Image (cartoon, rainbow over all chains, first blue to last red; front, side, top):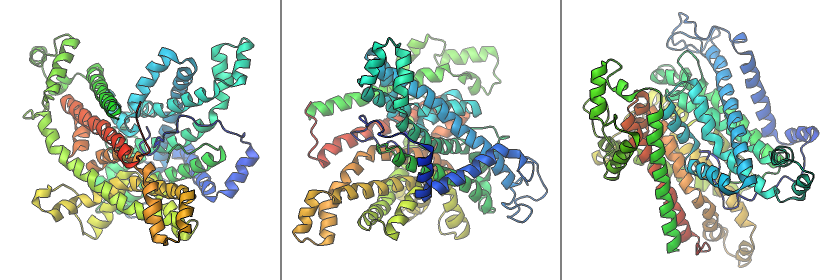
Length: 300
Length: 316
């Protein structure tokens, strides 16, 4: 379960399918109406652009040790420098790339695997359903972040293991949603119609059922990205994540921990980057939930 | 009801067994030999074999598993592989009160802030106060807990110097020393939880205020305070109680990270240090205890739920 999400309420299993289809024009209208979502989109776009351009727009080499150690924010170094004299702004800019990449890629992996597990479990039922859901329920009993820590405990630290750990930790949310959605639509007439035309199970699952269950999955994916970014930051902060040569927001904060009493900027700015990103995604997720008419299943 | 309780308790025990078994086998499948780690990768082949034999690691895995399980059932979780080989149960016994103190204080602080905030937001819907609470809740959910800890240290420890930045003092050495060391980490741990509770209370209150029995209560001419506190609030608490188990899980997860910011030697720090040192018995023990706390606090909340909401019956 997402540690900050998925406060399961008793009705969470029987969500109604979305009643309308989303068009681009409607999406634009939504952004215009919901100022929080508009701000979130703009801020997130800035971070995404920063991530794409990365080193190209960083004012200095993020690992270059300049002579100005623990320099306060100044014109030359808008966010100051760290204990080794590295430019903090450049490190945060490069960190954006790694943090956003991990956030998006982990959710993409857990979405694909989790949705597939949930679709097959729900569609076939029987022993397959029992085996898959027993495992998912076991994982559901723990917060995602704790699952990720457990997995790092088993696999060891490092960026690849971190991605695997976070991806696996978020599986259960997607599997549960996909399964409950399948159960709500698999008796629909269009599924029966597809079956009578001789469509294979695989075709029915991916071509007929999946397109009708996307709304809650999109919402879940959006909020999951924010939790994944928080999880990556926490794991990196604890020293369980990326190697020291790769600055991520969590790692920059970990390195700053010993110096924050003398150099406040080291403790403030990387966290502001995390907060703004996560806040933007939460704004967008909230608006999407209204827009796609996904009932709040206690997701916060 | 009794049958429900028995079934839930058995279920919780099965989950614990599954976690213990998974942890046992997965830690033995990992790359990185614990024996090599114990000898700091410097032992010769003979020493490695001797140690392997001494620890029973040369036996088939199912024999190891049965032995390990038997020892665990008797409360023996092995010993740290470093230094003076302190028993894991002793390490956990020292760490547990710190984590529980932290999570407990975080819980109290979070509820004390969230309940009035949620009530105000719901009763003064769409006013500046409501918007402030809603935005504050968004913010609380978006700040990493360890960063809140860092901010608090920068403000209250480094600059104002009101409170200590690190460490833990047991309660028996005085209330204020205990509280002063815990208050900053507790705020850091409780922020996200507080945001969740405030939002839940707000939306639950808005639901309740729309109901017929509230209209009747209003029609009777009850005062506004009486309406809110006596009639609406207790009903709005029901959905909040359902999330208490998860809330506690959230607080524990937060404590795992925040302990490392404030150098509090609790369960979280034990677990993380164990992972970083590849101290498998410690990792295994810490995971088991953390998991047990989750599983059994969830169980407790499920059972409490039936007391708080008498409409709920588990007769099946």
